[in-house]
Length: 58
Image (cartoon, rainbow, N blue to C red):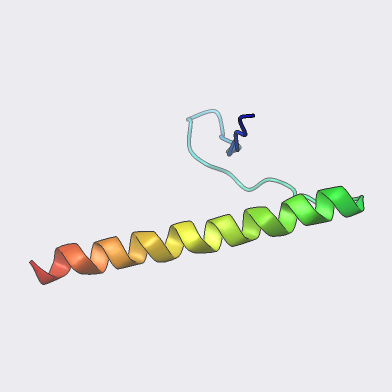
């Protein structure tokens, strides 16, 4: 079994990111996946910060 997680970004006519309406999960399954996505994002950002901090020490 394979799982894919997509990140979509709203862009304006110039291709720049723009605000989009918030996603509001409706079902228990949606809320579960939404929370999992939040956790993945927190881990991804923490890893990025750790990697950036490691390159600054060099």
